[in-house]
Image (cartoon, rainbow, N blue to C red; front, top):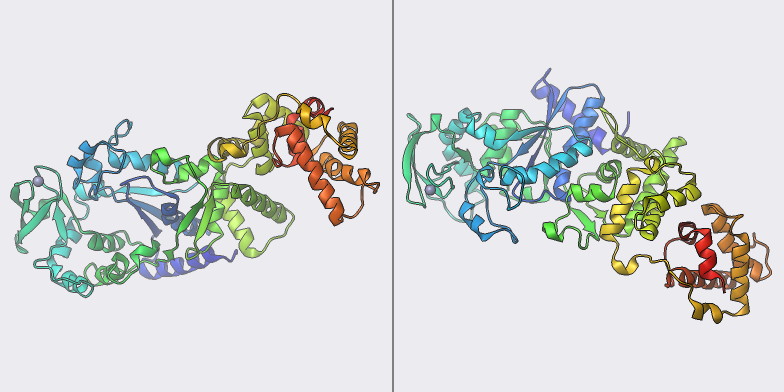
Length: 530
Ligand SMILES: [Zn+2]
């Protein structure tokens, strides 16, 4: 058995499920509000129980992962960039608000659910979605709603311990207005015997309904959440730091679930923040919030899974949209090589296994994983031209068809297109830098002569690496295998800078062997020959 934080939670959850509901499928849960884009931080809400549920399934136990869409919550505010006319919908359920202008989706909630649902499928995350609109309007929670109203005094007393001001009359149920659909309603009377409930709305409407037959309203959030723990029998559900302060939903919910609904609070680790590095421009048109779909454009699903699997929920981490992604991929490839040869610490192996597969099988992988760094350099230099890309990849790593390096190639290309700032993009010179070439000293000219003489013989990543490091040694009269000295390192730096200037008009750039392969031998000769 693999020992990591996921396995530890799975042990606990199985033991707890056996105690609470023996013989039944284990229930893990996530909850998301489709009020706006679901960002990468929210993905932890789904990924954490997914990993635990997946481990439980790997052990042959039946496990349900509920994704509760809080789409019956109210539309709170019109986000910047949306037609101010949407102001009229504030207070309606998210499923009763029209989708943002131009959307193909039926309503506001569906518009924001759809991209996450697609990303979860790509990530191999198997969930059972629940629409709270569907549940509430179908009367699925009628019994617990009546129970919450019956015990409103008890709920009020629990909440009161954290309140700073007194509430005159407390009702845990809020109707949506039958006339204007908004929740600007106030419950004015409730009769426990008949369940007759009277409310008025800010729009002027008012009516009396029988709550036992009324399916157009919902429990307030701090009561709704524990109600669902009990109703669904949830054994594992994590939540964000913001839910854990005194008086917060998790804290009061822990009391309400037992004292009102006769259930138990799930095992619920608190998960920390997920940050982003980079991500300059790409999503600003979509509100500046990087989503799982944005991340999956630039990295493969197993790599994104790995970022979440390798850190305990309470550890925060960052997802790289900037140059750091290249180092991240190097680390990922190094881990893969280590594991293939039987190495790796147990927790590393566990995280790698959870990243690359689920109980249902392996996730799609790139058959020939040329380094992301190399693919990005090639994408940069060729601006994505498929023929040039294939020629270079053939030279670099014997790639015979682009299918071998997909989907990683597509991710690297997308990253270069959307995340690499213009000033860092590489533009190979069209014409030689005649001025620079005519002013070269003897040593520089000799370096270039040696480079060109060795080019064909060394036409591979390793060969060219040996060649570009070796040329300054030969010029200095040293053997090619000479140990580096400070003087030699300085000579190598100068030589590299000269080549960058001649090839791309800058002092730095992609790794030289990759750059030379990408430019092609013929064009290299043309650009560096005096
Ligand atoms: Zn109204």
